Structures are given as C-alpha cells and as structure tokens.
Amino acid sequence: MKSEVRKMSETSAAPAAAVRDTFRQAYGREPDVMVRAPGRVNLIGEHTDYNDGFVMPMAIDRAVWIALCRTDDGQVHVQGVDMGDAGVFSLSDVKEAGPPLPEEAAEQGWLEYLKGTAWSLMDAGHTLTGWQGAVAGDVPIGAGLSSSAALELATARAFAEVSDLAWDPAVMARLGQRAENKWVGVNCGIMDQMISAAGRVGHALLLDCRSLEGRHVPLPAGTAVVVLDTGTRRGLVDSAYNERRSQCESVSAHFGVSALRDVTSEELVARAGELDDLALRRARHVISENERTTEAAEALAAGETARMGELMYASHVSLRDDFEVSSAALDIMVECARGVAGCHGARMTGRVSVAVRWPWPRPHRRRSWRSRLPPPTALRRATNHRSTSAPPPMAPASYDGHRAGTTACIDRASVRLCYRTTPGADARCSGAAHRLADGGSRRHLPAPQRQRRAALV
Image (cartoon, rainbow, N blue to C red):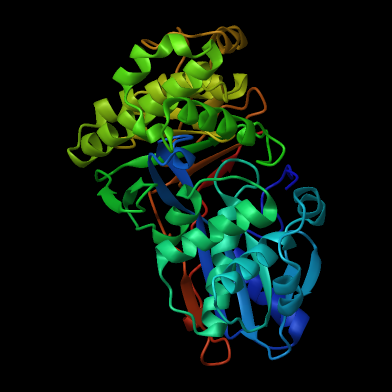
C-alpha cells in the first residue's frame, strides 16, 4: 500500500462524529451500529513478531471508526471520510476472485483492506452479510502506529456485528493478519492485529507471537507515554520490511529451526563465524530483542522503571546499528527525549519514537518551549551519536504537561506532531460496538476521544 503523508481524519478532530455525520448525509438515516478498533504503540519488541518471538505493545487513544447498517444486497458500500471518496464491492466477487497480485492491490488503495478482511473471513468459513457505512480514523498513516491493522479489525468487527459472528480476539487477529499477508501483500507479523483486538486500558500486552498467549502488564500509576512523530512516512510494501523478514528466515534455515525465536544468544555466538556480517547483525537484534522484551515485562510489573528505560534504549541502539531501520530524525528524537528529567526510556518504533515517563512532572516555571530547544549544532551531534551510555551534551527537550493538556515537542528535522496519551486512555479496544437503538440518540454515542496533541510550527 502506498504511503500517504497525512493523518487520518485531518478533516475532523472527532472521527466518531465524522462517520456518523457522513453516514447520515450519504444514506439519509442514522447508523444502526458504530464499531471501533484502536491503533497501537510498541513499547519494546521490534521485528520479533514475525520471528515467533515476544512483543509488548499497548493500545492508544487513536482509532478507526465505522458507522454502518446491514443491507441485503450482498455488497459493501463505504464512504471514506478521510480519503474523500467512496467504494463498493460484491462479497461473492471477492470470494470467487481471491487475492489479487500484490501490485494490483497496491494500486487500488484503502478499499483493499476491507476486501481482504472480507475474503479472509469468508475463506475461513464464515457467511457474511453486506452493509453500508462510513469509515474514518485519527491513527497517523504510515507512522508505525498500525493504522492498517486498526482498519482491518474495525472491518472485521463490522462484519461480526451484521453477520452475527462470535468475537474471538485471537481468531479475528489471525484473520486480519492473513488479509494483510495474502491480499495486501505485506508479510507482517501478528502483533498489530492482536493488540488492536485484545488491548486493555492502562496495560501493555506481553504477547507470545507463536502461541498467541498474552499477559496484560499493568503500567505504573502516573505513567505518561509520549509518541513523537517525525513527519516522515513509509509504507510497509514500499519499505525494507519484506527484505528484513527474508534475511531473518535465511538465518533460521541456516540454524535448522522454524524461527529465530528458537536460537539462543549462546548458540549465535558459538556459530557466528558461519554467518556473514549482515546476517549476524540481523539475527543478533532479533535474539537480543526477545530477551529484552521478556525482561522488560518483569521490570514493568515490578515497578522497576529505570531498568525498563534502559531496555528501551538498548532496543533503539540495536534497531539502529544491527537491524538498520532507524533514521537521523528518529535518533535525534530519542536522544532529546533522554535529556528530559523524568524520562526513563525512549526508542524508535516505525516512523515515530516513544518515550515513557514516571510520572509526568510539573515544570518549576513556565518558559517558552523554544527557549528549551537544543541548539542546531547539538542536533547535528545527535545524528552521529552512537554511544549506548550517556546522551550527548544538549539542552533538555521541551515539555509542558499541564497547560491545556498538551505536550510540547521538538520542531526540528521534520518533527511535526507530538502525542501524549495515558496508556490505553479511552481505548475501548477492538471490537467495541455501540448500537444506536433509539434512532441515533446522543446518549448512545461514544464520547469524543480526548485529543492531547500539540502541533508546533
């Protein structure tokens, strides 16, 4: 899928209200049901999911919404609020045709995610009913916050509502993953779909991507998770994602195992001479990241926030140096975040970085956020910084966690947006369905999400 350099729902600060209004305008009536599936941010465990390893994501308060009602024509009619267009497809045609060629799916755009989810459900033996609806969201597209998984799970929930399907989070997550693998052509792992299907407010999810066994890990009281958006975008189909996955699979085959999850650090060290430098570094990241992720879950559960932060930064260094998926903008963000008092950990994830604070402190005195920015020379130094210990000398990144509920961010190196969210806040996680039994009375509608966002120009 080609990347789009914009947020979903730039046209509305409240996707829930936007889809309801668009539905009413398009179909001349109120929707029967509204469904929601959240995006996610991954605290630790990067590129381990497709290696059958461990991940620890959390649901966020950005989501995809669909307002809909059932139809009897065997078709899906949908208005794309953010995309500014509409689409329609026949369920029988999708079932008979099967997945398109990857390049064909990429050319068609966002509607392919809905088609792929419908095909995956029908291919698994489910009988689907048609519907008409409107879709919108505020998960930034291409930023690594799983806008595609949120769209797939919201679509699955829509079909579940009108077709009377039982909602099993693990099963629906697998079907959403299959839609993205087989229909869209992205060989993603299970993490994104699983956290969108099974997230819990105030918790991260330690997920075994092989067995799909999960353990919800409570975050310490007062935790603030800050997502810093670089403003750069990538699409998984267009990126090096599939290349990294192929490299990992080659190393697994060399060791005679089904996935790198089955190779220990000791085995890798003992047989390092059998691998070229590139293969060794790719494998070293995945194997060490699995170890960091399981340790991080224990540290978080025990309230050992300093250790959790150390593991997050070690993860970033490994992603930067061994897996080579970071960027100059991400490296600058992580280093600046580490310079803020109270920030225990920061790392890249996708095209954003995530920083965790316990708790969010009140500034001693209010100053302009610009006065607290590191000078340009310090930012340039951060680009080349490769130490895993102390950050380079620079002024702390700015913040203001109490003025109008916003958080300041650094407007350098294409840094555009900063999102501060209470973990899982308002994340009535996937599958949340809100029936409008009284013809759309407001009391049956979900409250608008709190938008804690500061766009600093």
